[in-house]
Structure formats: C-alpha cells, structure tokens
Image 1 (cartoon, rainbow, N blue to C red):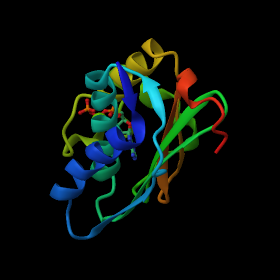
Image 2 (cartoon, helix red, strand yellow):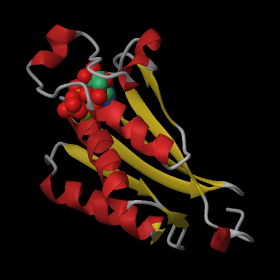
Image 3 (cartoon, helix red, strand yellow):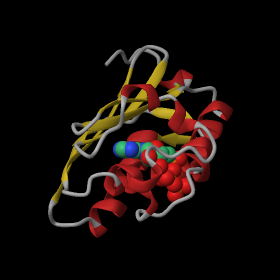
Image 4 (spheres, helix red, strand yellow):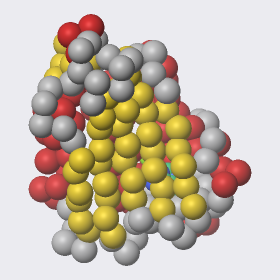
Length: 158
Ligand code: ATP
Ligand code: MG
C-alpha cells in the first residue's frame, strides 16, 4: 500500500509517547512534508514497535530517544537512537540473529525472547531495505533502516 511515511511514523511514535515514563524524553526529527513509500503497514508497525520498545527497555534510567526520518534520492532512512546501556562493538550485528541476546544475565529480568530484531530484519528484507545498528557500551544504541522510495518523491532531494 502507498503510505505517507512521515504521518505513519508520527502516529506510531505518538502511541509510545502517550505511555512513556516521565523520566524519558522523546525528540523527533521527522519532516513535515510527505515521504511516500510502498509498504505493508502492519509489518513495518511490527518493526517500529520492536525497535522502539527495545530503545525504552534497554534505557533503564531514561534519557532521550531520538526519532528521525529523511529521504535521499533513492531511499528513506529512519533512525531510532537511545541513551541506554548500549552493547559491545562485536555484538551489533549478532542482535539480528534469532534468539540472540547480549549478556543473558543482564537481559533475563527484562523479558523477551530475542526474536524481535530477527523478525524486523526479515520484514525489512522483504521490503528490499536494510537494517543495522550502531552502539557504544554505556552510551547508547541507534537502530537504522532504509526503505526504497516511491517514484512520487522524485524531484525532492531533501
Ligand atoms: P523480544 O524482542 O523478542 O521481546 P529482545 O528485545 O531481547 O526480545 P531483540 O529485540 O531481537 O530481542 O533484541 C536482541 C538483543 O539485542 C536484546 O536482547 C538486547 O540484548 C540487544 N538490544 C536490542 N536493542 C537494544 C538497545 N536499544 N540497546 C541495548 N541493547 C539492545
Ligand atoms: Mg525486542
């Protein structure tokens, strides 16, 4: 389905913002203008739900979660950054594997199965995009993904 991603993304973030803890700050850098993508909304909602709940879950002392979306000539790029516990450099690629969880003892009490990001990668692959993470232990994590742009956006270069 053809979807204006900026509206869609804002609606998902609104839902989390309504339920967020007061020690957590949300910051959005989402353009006002439409960015059209051809997506399965349910599947991309699942991706965003997991990435955003991870950002919250792995930020035990709050901090700021930053949401950004911008388009280049060929693709939409989305990022969700937190100031949480982060992870060691050699694990940022493994978190997309099924059942992989960084430091079992640390994450055991936080619940979850370790499937969320593996499913997210499948969904983004099915949309011909890419998903990856950047992280620093004790500083925070960013999860980024891309989606191909629809032709309607051509002529927009911002
Ligand atoms: P599930 O999503 O299935 O409920 P989960 O959140 O543990 O469980 P994933 O979402 O696949 O599983 O994430 C895999 C692992 O990657 C997590 O267990 C956690 O160790 C690490 N991780 C994911 N996101 C972050 C983040 N924002 N900050 C720190 N660690 C993270
Ligand atoms: Mg998760």
